[in-house]
Length: 173
Image (cartoon, rainbow, N blue to C red):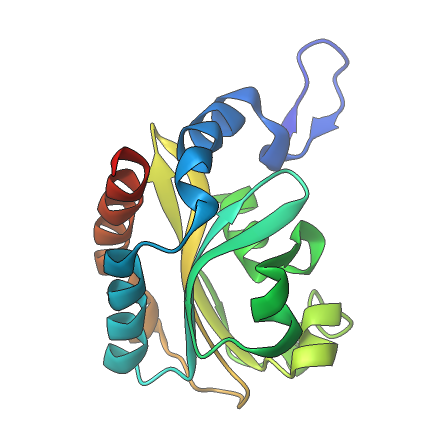
């Protein structure tokens, strides 16, 4: 968290004006999944042998799923979740890659409703940047513990610029 210069109190990184301005640039393109972005997410899932993969845009209070692979049920129907449930929001908030080998062993996620309801056990995600601001995440998820490794996280880091390019094309297209 950063500190407000006016009040000397913590400000959640998700509500920083610079970040919100960057997120706002992508909002016009979120009305439908771009076929190119969808193919990319499918390819990421195949490459990392992940049952689920996605590109998310993190708003102040919600994670919006822009393209997914293997996500079904209520989560697919809703198209996102509250930000406080989304590991992707943690990625964006701290602007750093996140690897969770077992959500049941991670105190920050043992009572997370997303984990409890969907059964997510493994997560790897990296920030997506626009104008130097973390605006979303490229991630993979699995229902089994220990599925993803540091090497998988490194692969996601190398793929993140392509995801950002596809997001730009979605907005411009």
